[in-house]
Length: 463
Ligand code: NAD
Ligand code: UGA
Image (cartoon, rainbow, N blue to C red; front, side, top):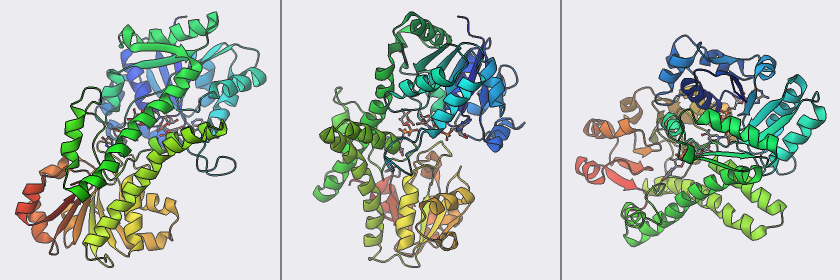
């Protein structure tokens, strides 16, 4: 089947960049990204490409090249479904906040809505691709909805999980380690797989495109995230032991990472992993394991989350303890609010939880982040519902200038590893602060001896 029209439901951090790259690499395919969120679609269509809703290095250029040529953003979901041969589902799959599985299971209501809409609208055969991260065996439910509520047309369901990381989405999409496509073993299933393989083959080498059965593909995505997050919790567990023993976690990470069986990536100790996926996907894995009665399996993976929560709390406790056991009425500057550098995404950012702890201790937080607005910072805190929005407003203020954020502060906490922090005039910052001036480097990005020579009392993670 020659593919000329693709639709993607969900114009978020995955749908937007993924489809932009497909459109750029496949000028012969018309790609339409649809979303219910009118504001988001309007931002994707903003004449000034710098205003697209997602910040990713290099994404603006790709959108500028393809938008209006073969890349379109629209709120007309029905029309896009109707016209497409392949429909990607890239909607959010957050942790359930209600009912059975509350706090653990993935909330599949948005997925089900998409399936019902595809079934209702489709008047020709379609390939439906799970791009969202889903519990293993979700394809079964999607198929049942499509077959039972559809108009008699044929649907093939493929699983094609996305492995991009935010902040490096464009390079990850252009040079993926692998593309994973799971599908049915029937002749129709194999044809559908081949159609999607052909799309990716426009820029990805054949040996990097892996095809499997649907369940392996669905489960591989959860497994990949669990393994990645596990490495962070493992090194973070070691960071506390390093602090007690005089070992340095950066040196330990380097030493173990040089063993090619371990590898050097994802061994950076930090204030804890954030982001929209690691926590939700591991909780989902734990829930799935429990639902099959595999309690030991569930407990094993849950410990990754327990360790991560502990690491965030440990960081705020260290700040309080070091500042003579009280931070009440003290200004503490936060450098960074995003969950990692090069993104404007703040979902589950460690900064939110550290700020919440410190506001409980009546500290005054001053935030600077190059890509996150003050409005977003407040909304993130309000979302926790620890205290009223009025109280949050008193506890936290955002600045557009890092030097003003740090002025008169008792301490600086580095929460995100933005490169620009390293190049600041740290002497000037030191001179503008209360003394003694402390730096709590939650990302180990600043040079300890340089900071100490300026006069700071410097505390990194794990040393
Ligand atoms: P997101 O919240 O940024 O985007 C999802 C979008 O879907 C939203 O804009 C929402 O309005 C839209 N939507 C929801 N229901 C809809 C419907 N019925 N019709 C039309 N639009 C609808 O989420 P995201 O970060 O892009 O993640 C999407 C999925 O991809 C999740 O399952 C996530 O686990 C997975 N994933 C995310 C990343 C990442 O780095 N963010 C990476 C790999 C996989
Ligand atoms: C992660 C995975 O890396 C992607 O492969 C996956 O597609 C994605 O989740 C997803 O499914 O959503 P992402 O969360 O965007 O990507 O970013 P990461 O680079 O994985 O960072 C996650 C968190 O871990 C960040 O807070 C980061 O600072 C932290 N981290 C990462 C560490 O603390 N140490 C490390 O060594 C690496």
